[in-house]
Length: 331
Ligand code: SF4
Image 1 (tube, rainbow, N blue to C red):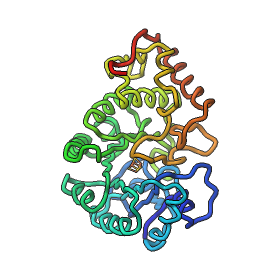
Image 2 (cartoon, rainbow, N blue to C red):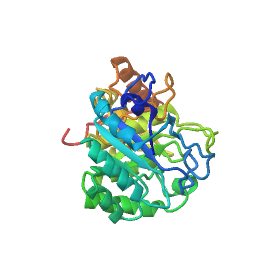
Image 3 (cartoon, rainbow, N blue to C red):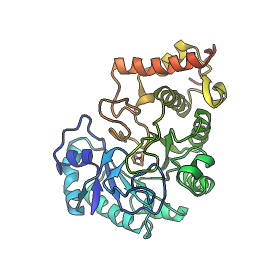
Image 4 (tube, protein in one colour):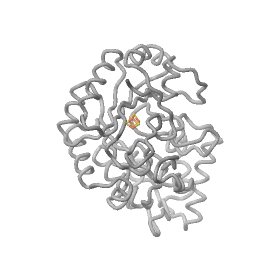
């Protein structure tokens, strides 16, 4: 049995729902009864065990035969990648390797495996077993937040992430959730260092979910999320140096750019689209349809782009003064 996100299942012809935006990646979830105690996650041992939930998304169960059959229709419907996520189970990554083999028999789409691994050799087995990429989720941006919301050692996870990124350049990613108690500065310093190591960072917004210990906590404020999204995009693209950003009490005070330069650097709206593995758009993973779109699962309209950039500019203006300055050398 494998769980398939409702939007993916619809794309594969396995379920009838009307999706506002189709996924461009097939999202699969294996396992129940996660050993981790993450206080934001419905799969964790600290939650009410809602096996069909992860993020805001429903994950109905299907057989592996149904999954295999679904790829043909899914590819015709626009799927460009497979994301196989696993909860942390007693069997380690062995069940994921088996499912990976079944996926490889059914499709040539590149596969990313996002799972708990204990050491680099487990990542090696997944990559040798047909995964194009692996993701080792940090989720939290600092050791302090990690301890509070996940328990355990941020430093160990971080070291493993870097070890894997160095062993397999361009094939390793991580997930960072904003809004768990980190400052904008802490999140951006971490992301900047990860980009330098060639790690792909997928940004998520903390989402309060029923049945989890953090159900009553507020999601991140939209202006703050937009600021970090904008800055992290420019850092990732090499269009802004971390040293140009200034912060006050952990919040971005200035991008070191004039409003015109910032608007020009963010033109096109890419900064506000879902980022992570190629073709990963995670529709409505963090958002209610009709609510604030933390990550756009599709290109922005001109009006949406204007609105998103206005929010970054407004927030920066309120925080302090814009600096006159140029984009990083080479832009
Ligand atoms: S970035 Fe997207 S495709 Fe990659 S592991 Fe994360 S959710 Fe899966």
